[in-house]
Image (cartoon, rainbow, N blue to C red):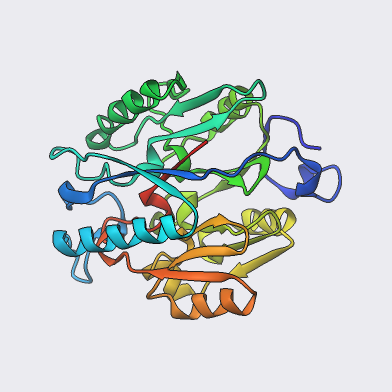
Length: 305
C-alpha cells in the first residue's frame, strides 16, 4: 500500500495499484450549495469567461437560477441531501462551493475541514462564510497549509478515489505543489498528484470525474504524458471524453453521487451516450451560465461527511 505522501508517477508504485487494498470510507450523502442569486461575472479568472473576440461574457441570472434549481432537484432525486447557504452580493463566485475547503473524517472519527486559500484575492473572503458553517456543525477547522504566494482550492483540486482512502490531487494553477505534501501528512492519506498545464483545465475537477474506484472520465490534453500514464495506472479504465465536450461543455466536471450513477452536462450528448453504453444511470442537467465562469456540476457543491 502507498504511504501518506505524494506520488507523481507510476514508477513510485512498488507494484500494480489496487484501490481495493485501501481502507473504505463512507460516501457523502450531504451537499452544501450556495444560492446563486448574486452569481455574475465581474472579472476573468479563466479562459471560459471570454468570447471568441476576447470580450467577457455576461450571465443570464434568471437562467442560472433555473439551472441551479434543476441541479438541486437532480441531486436530491439521486439520494443526496442538499443544504443551502445564502450567497453574498459582493461574492459572485461563492456559488462554486467545491473550492472552499476539503472536509473529511479522521481515522479517530473526528469531522475536520481544511479551509482553502484562494488564488484570486477577490475570492478569499468567501472562505469565512464556509468556516462559520463548519464551526456551527462541530467540525474541527484547519487553515490552509499555505505559505506566502501559495494557494489551495479545496475539492477543486482534491478528489477522493470514490469510497477508498486515497486522494487524487491537482496542482499548477490554483493549488501549489508543496501544499499537497503538507496535506498528505495532515490528512494522513496518500495523494496521487497530477500537474495541470492547460489553463482551460485549471482545477483537477475540470479534467477528470471519478466514476467509481475502477473507472474515471477524463480529458487527455488536460494531463501531461506522465499524468495520463499515472491515471491509467490508478484506474482499470479511463473513459476519454470527446475534446469539444471536455473543453466547451466541461463534461469532466460531472459528479457521481454513488457508483453506477452520474450527473452530466446535458449538452455533452456524446459523453452521455458513452456512459449509458457502459451501464451508468445518467442524469443530464444544463449548466451553460455557470460554465461562463469556468464551473459546472462538480464545482457547484461541496460534499459533507
